[in-house]
Image (cartoon, rainbow, N blue to C red; front, side):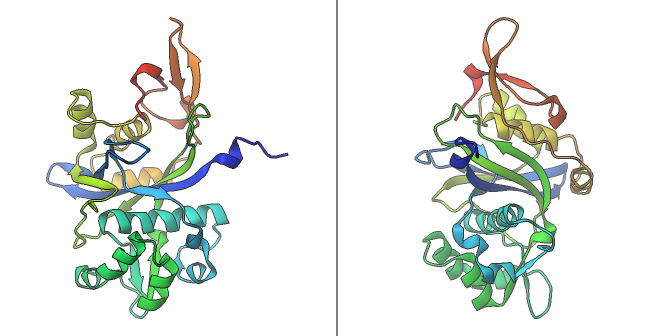
Length: 266
């Protein structure tokens, strides 16, 4: 018999777009709109829920790197690319004729398609077929897997991916779900959160900290490719002082393994 709690999980994917800046590794992050019901006002990675249309058969035939992926992983990778495109205008896709990643000129010509996706008028498969594109899921590197604690009213089953942002794609917030955006060094993001300049929820913060161990994109992706991903589902428990905390597995390899519940922001 299946776990009733697991049936309520919402599949979602998020993408950590990376580049090498003047002072080292930078990641693209957006500020959630204050009316969004999850991570309102927080600095987060672009991402969102899997759309049922992400797994339509027409999509299956237009994804590079889909070989051997089960339905769950396939849907996660498609959603990660689609959400990054909808939310910040970066599209990891190749022209099916040339096999090359689309450039800034082609990306600009696709803007009406992006608008239609955001208005939910079309699915990603419609755009791929009509524009002769293939999603470059082979450019995604799995980085983390988190499940929202069972105390929360809305629970997500979320896969995090790393990807190099195409140099000529201008990443920018969509002005709807996200209201601001920034390329930022992971260490700076953590510091600004500690100083109270930014709001970063616990799962985002520890993943930013983990990313900040690396000085460049190549190192971050190489480490992720060779890492064993441990699923993290924080558990509510108490520390030695009897204070309620969220605890995550040591095996997941983060800088911290627990967070006072009083500091957790949703």
